[in-house]
Amino acid sequence: MDGYAFDPVENRWEKLASQAPVGFLGASACEMSEGKLYFWGGYCKETFDTFLSQISAMDAAREPEQYQAVFCEFMSRPIPAYGWNKEIWQFDTQTEQWHIAAQNPYPANCGAALIKDGNKVVLVEGEVKPGLRSLESKAFQFQGDGTIHPMRLPAISETNNAHEGLAGHFGARLENHYLVAGGAYFVGSQHNFSQQKLYSHKGLTKRYDDTVWLFDGKQWEAAGQLPEGIAYGTALTVGDSVILLGGERQMVALRASASD
Image (cartoon, rainbow, N blue to C red; front, side):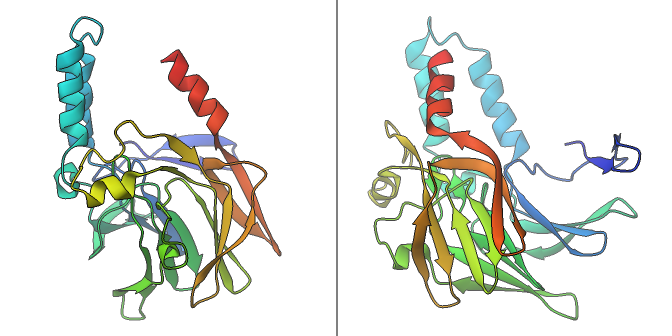
């Protein structure tokens, strides 16, 4: 819940006096005017901490059935039960004060791709609950009177009806187009959820995508492929190029799972 500011002149981090008002793990954020940061989505710290406390107190080897029961119950909850952040929060870097700028009318996301386009912020997909991705693309237009006007944009799934949604994907604006690349999803999770299986990713494989999608203002189209599937990094536009930094690959994730 702590916040830190980096001073590039002094080359050091300084802890902020104020704490975040809600859990922002997985949230998307950007600066819309000088010193004004806006945050969308993010998990509910209390809900997740309670779950971790439960399973951490259990011995999975000695109590496998009880452990699985607790785990499955958590993953089988409906979307609203996770309590993810539904407000759009503003942070003033000068006063270090937080306040709610607006309500988000759409399901809260974790791991959505954020693209800033002038006075507009675009959010592409992201998780709506553990293991299940959103299929929505949304825009939030910042008006001159301080209000924020939300609107839906065409979805990637309208171009590819087999699209599972993405989380942890890279997002950027390139000339007059929006670009998203990479990301991760569970193959078959959308079908399971449509069949009322709330633990939608149970037994499924997590896939790291290599597709590059471009939005021209009317529709999304697959414009290319990355050298490999990758997710959970960050992107920035430099001139007429998009640079992808960091991220996690399929091979890394499999190795981590084996070690756990």
